[in-house]
Image (cartoon, rainbow, N blue to C red; front, side):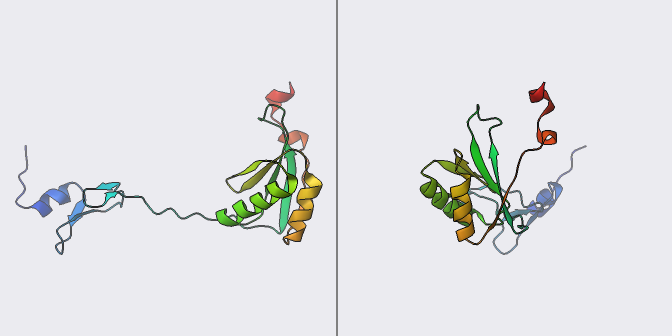
Length: 143
């Protein structure tokens, strides 16, 4: 059986949409609109949350997954993206090495833990050096 629709609002209602009578535009109930002919591509607002810091900047040396090259990772800072990038830039300049920000972790190439500690303490962070426990290792890599 086919159902006939007497109005545009009946048709929109069948698809889970509603019509604004003010400007006769169709709006969705789930706000998943990605493109509009009048506005073009529509980007959804994404709210990023920053993980709260426990008061310590955790500095640790990692080589896993980097073909034996060592990097220093700094986590637990509790900063937003812009502040993390500024701090990473300052650390890279001080250490004279490269690095990047991945998520909420700053990665600095090489083993410059003492220089990193001085810069972080100058910026008001308490520094804690983290050593890798045997339990943290992947069991397959040990065999």
